Image 1 (cartoon, helix red, strand yellow):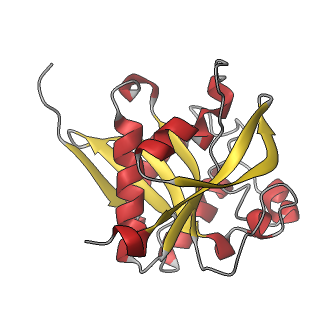
Image 2: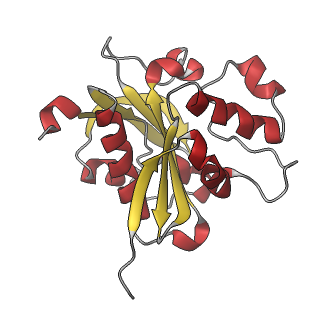
Image 3: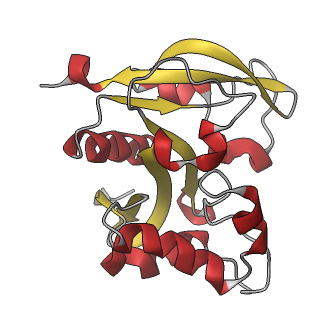
Length: 200
């Protein structure tokens, strides 16, 4: 297979058509998360429908903080990773299952999505590395994530957006605490990458 050019860029307002290419459903009436369920209070999250959900995610970028990064393969949008300060995720800051372990102003990765025809090519690792680079460029001291540890069991594709322990540990993240959250019966861990330790 010929080498492919893979790039990862912050999801600025100018790139939101590319975000939509990854996240939007084929039919605008199909319920889709748009990486808002962790960010918004429940009432607002449940009230948003259809195209309003994509528009709400775009507003984060328009307000000055791109809410994630987009991966491109040969110029075509191929993947998305949601990353932003944990403090900007209403559901995370109030979570009973995923703890806040200290007062470090961490950035949180809550979702990784790769379009079907770009899967099984290692793109998730490029997305993760690009997300970490973006957080570092914005001064984040630590990046945190909440992947599932399926062990020997097969992980349903419904839970793939959380990422797996093997993906994050290969990227240098370390386990901090096992959460009480579960995905398909498997535990989810709180993992961290200290950017001050990995700088340079």
